[in-house]
Length: 292
Image: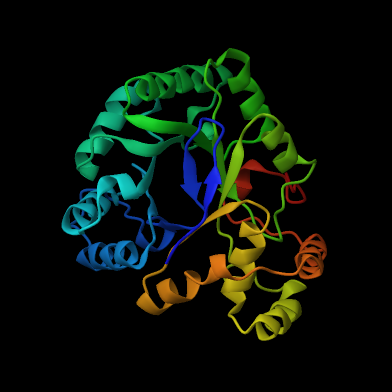
């Protein structure tokens, strides 16, 4: 499987489809025993061509990612590993060193500041970002970015940064398309978008107008509804991170980069999605009708 890449403004490139180790695999206690099931699935994903593996210090799954990489036969240069810093934002270099130890790696390809709401202040966001600039300069993170940042958080960061974030990973799907031209605005500032919960309309966010449309489109393209939704993201140069505990789902999702939706079908999904609103992550930070 050959997955196309999305060029980043720092000269690096991220695979358009990634395998995530949060949600399904999230651990409340990172010291819990290793999930050998996850290790085996990660090894299968790597062997299948999923070069982009996404994790975070708060997921508790960095050790599994590291073991899977060590046990795979794939060279480090062919992989794209993303991790994130959340609770360790006050000392980012130390937090990344701890992540690298768990990952058994010398560097990560993308390091993200995970959650501005945990930091809680503009000064904290700016200080934490300086830490990411330091680890990039040290060569321990090839690219640096953000996750779950709204426009006002990014504006705060841009006031003092010397290196811009190249990626914002956030919830994005037809029912949450980020109002007020947020995605175009980020791209104007050299920030690309990666999405999580891209399958929300057929998983946690059922009940909207896509309930009828997606089966029709899946039949038209002879793929699953999941593949239609992933292809909808990829067609807009948004890189989805998905996850599963099933080998068959891995196989299914891997076809998403091969399916190109017709522009009219992309637009139909877009317009249908705008008629309904659903947010999964951090809904307590937003008003019920806030689509930003």
